[in-house]
Length: 142
Length: 232
Image (cartoon, rainbow over all chains, first blue to last red; front, side):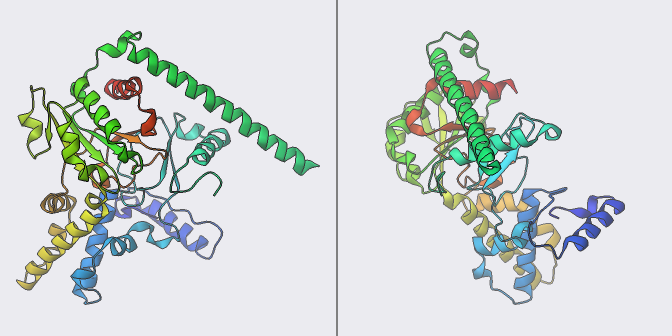
């Protein structure tokens, strides 16, 4: 789970912890829920973690670079923290404070469909749109 | 046999969706022509005051077409946009800053405080940004905050919670020369629909619109994107 869980209700926190425990050993699919998540908070939190490590003499201030900050973000637990495709539903064209660091080269797909109505057809359209893109980040035939 | 049928069905779905996107593309080209020619009257009066700050991201290969970039910025100035940020990942536009400014009328380089000082004037302010203003700048800003924190710790004060805040990060970014307002609208020119590393600290509530490659730059499409934003 990514985000500030301290502001969630106790019952919801218990459910999230239980789900994490139950699925810990699974290996086919990594699902991250970003709840009460703010991109700016994620980066600020990463800086705090780095400050702790400097305080404990694990790293030097000169070692701080982009790679180090990336390793402290909420998505550092996955093999591929930077998504290839982001699907934004409900017709909104804004990222609304979501994943600041990781989306530099992510294909952004905006759809008018509201979330409950986003089904297989919409998903196929998103994948097709992603497939059609050409560029240094991957051609359709890669 | 069933796998062949599934494969054919998949190809058919692909074909239908491809035709749909092709027809959509033709319709967009036609609409852009009608807007540029003035046939669609609603685009003649745009409340451009709603668009306080516009950012334009250009793919680095497209950024080599400086004449197109100059044309785009001049169109934006003619529409009445007051503040524009030009970004490309490799800093090609930054390096071409002098050439671009020289070929534009009523455009000046962005300075802090321009939002107030340019009100009511015809001048547009232009900012240039690149990858060094994105993740690199965040790393430098983090370093700055850390040095401040360590200094205070050495004086016996533990101000961690007060130093590592979003507001202080914004200030630190300004101190390393990568501050700047949050754009209301971001137009992406390039083959890929992504922001290509635009300083993401400034993209919280920015609307992002993909305009296609710079070689197919059209005044009608630009006007339509700005018009749609002002309706929101």
